[in-house]
Structure formats: C-alpha cells, structure tokens
Length: 230
Image (cartoon, rainbow, N blue to C red; front, side, top):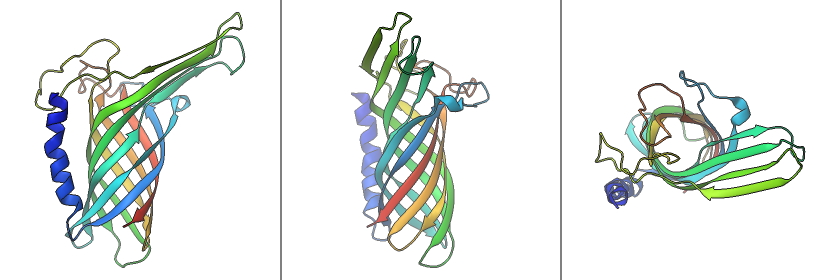
C-alpha cells in the first residue's frame, strides 16, 4: 500500500536519530485524557473526555546549549466518548471512539542547567498515522433491554504523496493521517522523567473534509507521562 511505503523513509530517519551517540534515549508511558473539538473555534465538551494511554521511545538530541530536539515513536490512543443517562436505567446510551496512532513528534525542548532534577519546557509539530482502534456502543432501551456492539475503526488509504486528494474517502471513514502541535513541560532526574503534554490536532477526522475550514472535529489530547532514561 502507498501508505506503508510513504512511512518507510520516516522510520529510517527516526532509526538513525535514536541511535546517535549523543542522544539521550528514554522509554515513556502514561495516561491520555483524549477529546475531540466540537465547535468551529476548537472548544471541547469536557463530558466527552476519554481515558486512553500512550507508550514509546524518545530521544533527546542536543542542538545548542540547553536546547534539544526531542523525537521518537509513540503508540498513542485518542478519541472521545458520548454518554446519555445513567447506567442500568432505561434510555442509557454510551459510545466510545478510540483510534490508535503511531506518532512522531519533533519537539524543541529547553532544559535548565545542571544534571539532576532539571526542569524543561518545549513545543513543536507532530505527525501520526492511524493503525487501529475500536468504536464501542452500549445502552439500555426504553423497554429495559440492554444492547452492545463493537466495530473496528476504518481508515482511508491516503498517503502524504497525494497532497490534494484523499484516497478511499467515504462516509464513516477516518482520515489515516493526523498532524498538529505538541506542548510539553516537566522535570527530569538521573533516571526518571515526569512530564505533562498537550496535543493540538490540526487535521479533521472525517475523510474528505477540509482541515482549514474551521477547528471542529479535531483531536485534543492531554497526557501525563512517566519516563525512564536508558
């Protein structure tokens, strides 16, 4: 598939970065509080927040003085939920939308001087490719009968080389590629890193939609990370 072929050069570059002799590599994992914007100006409904997770490997590449480029590969869950009523009551409805992505950040990070307990802050772009996920629905109708269903999320077969065309776009299909901006802040010791991250998606989820039209229906992810230096 074109999508897979387009991703191979990116992975090759990433592999070279993470094995650099000067890079400080770390394994990271943590909690995602994911949501999707619901208004044209990009606001979210807090009631739709969905708990997910992220995990992966990052490398800090020294640029100049306290400035580093932080990049790597993360497996990250995004999405949101919708719920009406109370569980075990008639009319209850709950649906979760939880896509998973392989994400590559390119975050410029500035660290305070020293070797122990250094604070850091940073920002930069990210690109991500959808690799799976589920939509789950459950509820109880007005007659008291419970129901549930689960289906895999379907992504379009788009790839970055088709700038003005999205392949296999259609109703109910999610765009394969996501991109946006990341912000991060935290503290790192000799072996442990604690960080807070925020991902501001700039790509609409629906296939065939215009990402520049407004900021509705885009990923918003607040993450809390625990990292271990290698």
